[in-house]
Amino acid sequence: MFFKGTGTAIVTPFNENGIDYENFSRFIDWQIEQKVEFLLVLGTTGESPTVLGSEREELIKFFIKKVDKRVPVVVGTSSNSTAVTVENSAHAQKLGADGVLVVTPYYNKPTQEGLYQHFKTVAEAIEIPLIIYNVPSRTGSNILPETVLRLAEFKNIAAVKEASGIEAQVDELLRKMPAVRSDFSVLSGNDDQAFHLVNAGGHGVISVLSNIAPLATSNMIREALAGNVVKARELHLKLFPLMKNLFMETNPIPVKYGACKLGFCKNILRLPLVPASEKCCKQIDNDMKECGLI
Image 1 (cartoon, helix red, strand yellow):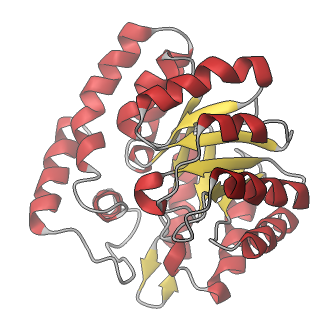
Image 2 (spheres, helix red, strand yellow; image 1 turned 90 degrees about the horizontal axis):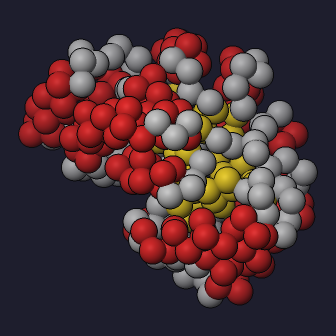
């Protein structure tokens, strides 16, 4: 099972001139030192829609070189065009990515058959593992368990990041997947549901929270995977207010402020996102203090 444990959906540090590679370098080292199992670059939390095409290749090259095989690197390659997603995914593979994250196509609102054909086409165009990303609140498309089960027949479709928030849907997938594919990972895409998903038989989380609490998040998941429910629950409940409030404004607005408080980036986002409100900043400050992060 290639993807298991905690993967950080890492923020992209910006400065007034572009991508802040100096801070990015320190941030990557810290994440690995804090024992996350893998890293995701150019996801939603990394503000991928506003990373320019001219910046993308340099960013991926830098990231892969900096990580230097210490942990697996997953690259977000999504588009609502299948052809563009294939192109992005093949290019990420060529640059040395260990896997790609592909979101259900947004705005187009494909049928379940359209979703199946989309992921099938991308998977057949590459050799590295592919993670399906299901986040209906952002895309308007919900990939159902039966479609994921069909896609699990492709060996390089290795995992699903489930952020539908529909517990019954996730449980149905966890119930049926072992009979189809024993090495397929079901990962939470919501920090506040990760504890529950792992205890229901899931395999980890792709996390926003771990940008600012990587050790605590990865320890929570490791304890849950080991069956240490009491310890995992203790960590979950301690982190719970911060988990929730990192989404009081649109992700990654609050978490970028948190990463700025830790000194790993400037609090710069690209339009149409704007920095956190004063109310949000005060709440994140309080939550980070309560968790012992600042």
